[in-house]
Image 1 (spheres, rainbow, N blue to C red):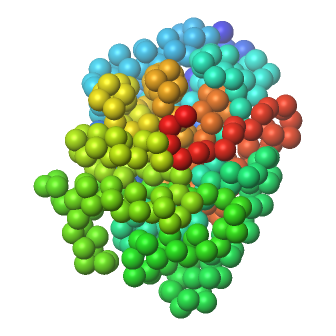
Image 2: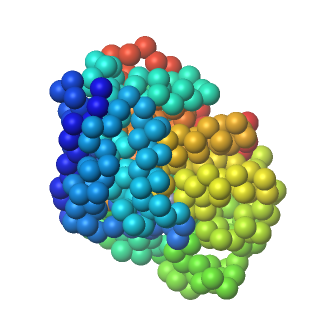
Amino acid sequence: MTIQSVQSWPILDSRGNWTIAVELTLSGGARAQAQVPAGASTGKHEAVALPAAQAAANVNGEIAQALIGRDATSLPAIDQLLIDLDGTQDKSRLGANALLGVSCALARALSVAAGQELWQTLRDIFRPSRPASLPRPMINIISGGLHAGANIEFQDFLVIPNRAATVREFLETTVSIHRAVGRALREKGYVLTGVADEGGWGPLLPSNETAMDVLSSELDGRADIAIDVASSHFYDNQGNYQLKREGVVTNAAGITDLLASWTERYPLVSVEDALAEDDWEGWRNLTQRLDSRLQLVGDDFFTTNLARVRKGIETGCANAVLVKMNQIGTLSETFAVLEAAHKAGYRCVVSARSGETEDSFLADLATASGAGQIKIGSITRSERLAKYNRLLEIERSDQLAMAGPVTGGRG
Ligand code: PGA
Ligand code: ZN
């Protein structure tokens, strides 16, 4: 079976920015598409996405030329060919978005050719060390930072429906909490202007802690809390974290103290990017102090980059990895990060971007890898629901276990 054609064209993402779709056809006639997402609070160490028109032109030109007629059966071999063809460390010549679109379209075309579900094909190709399972989600309820007009600094206030036993149950719980929080925000007189980039509420609040207060007051024991501080975006590169809304400037130790106090007052179990992307010393201290109480997730800190994840493991930084395919650019490299994290006892959260498409690929990726957790935004906006609804579909047709509850701290 060989690759017969590869084509790409620009499409719009959920923010109305241009991204790309890729369609790939195999010699047996199997054909499939993939769409590529884009971030707003991007990490400095992410692979480079080129402008959509340029990325599409690279797929239609140089990449198509290199791939047409090639044996399609080994996705890792094709990924390696793409990496070598690009030739740069950060994929800036052909574009990480161009490479990822091809990698995902090929995976899907192989699943069509095999008459399998996408998650089964991914599992068979990459054979992760954990069995496939339905991921437990962390779901955005209140948004801040770059996703909500910098209303407050911390980017995501999410719920983990830890008591739910099925996808349907966790969605029901979350819809109910999302509505209750919207009602509570309105009753307290906070200005609500629709929903933010990932479908959570983006209210004008006096402080980050107010978001914790409102969210925790509507949980009723049904869920625990996760947050994404996304702190690189209010860090001045000289040791200061600027909480402008409250008129406070703090440092790594101050953020660590704040989080420690929140673990005592709220059902907080997971914190992402508590500290800035290159604050290795701060991360080490944070991990020493809170490793047993919190899941400490690196997003911009790790950027799904194997070298950074290995350095984090060796130096005792964080205890979980946020996994975003487009931060690195191919499925093979994404699975390498998942494997390395699992082997070191670090947990994984497969994640979408704030600029998403209606592609549901992530639901299959999270299931296939047995990652255990998924983060795809809120329960409004169809680019988010495409993934939740795909999880419902997988749950309905396949006998898969749901990953267990997310506890604070390692283990
Ligand atoms: P991004 O945000 O896609 O804008 O980077 C998502 C996140 O920070 O987790
Ligand atoms: Zn993040």
